[in-house]
Length: 359
Image (tube, rainbow, N blue to C red):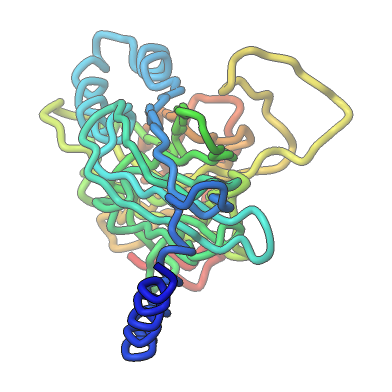
């Protein structure tokens, strides 16, 4: 028996020497396997079910009914609803899912992209057991003006606007984002709920031409953020904010016209000692500082330009629509009856004025 055992051992020893490289690799593979009993499984994958839901908090219905509630406004109101139908909607075409380390340089550890085409969707994702910061963006793919930038690292990820000049166009989609810390644990069947909220907003100028040709009118807005930091839900404001060319809203409403901008929000009023508690997220008292502007340029029949600037003293917030009704007087000046709006007019305006707006 002893001799037989020695023979078997010698034979095995010879085989190991003959293929020691292969045996070594196999040994490392077994030792590193997550299925090895009683070994550290901190790097093993764990399936986590994550439910995503778009949550639309908006005032669009109230604003249209309040500002365009008259019989004479019904056609333009319906045209504006159609125009903003793909903006103020709790529907996501695409979602981008990133999972970041919560330590060191907060690098991205896992990344997935999906076509969601729904208001709600669930995904089962295999993640190593550890703590994460999870960032989500939706509807970026078809919004040619915005891109997800510097998203390899959590605290640098932002939605930025693409533009070669100071004048840009409106957003084409309603942008939604979310951030959520997650802890994937061993031995638990886990599910997470992630709610996405809107990151952009809209402004609309409804114009009564009073006999003037609306083809001679161009409308811009300015004063809005240029980027959005996804990790801390904060907006980036450039020293010189972008000028946004408003889009004429297609309509068959006869005389009235409508010009619409979809953008990131404006700044808030500087903090004061007055605190107003409200359950309405879009209620705000006018302050003393102009936060954003409508810029109107009307070409008169003699070829001169009349510039009208409307200063808005209430913030335009994410998910909000702001409508301003105006009319054009006999001198080509755009006017409003809203007493909360500041107005400045420059007759015979030229590009050397205080607003560098290409026409």
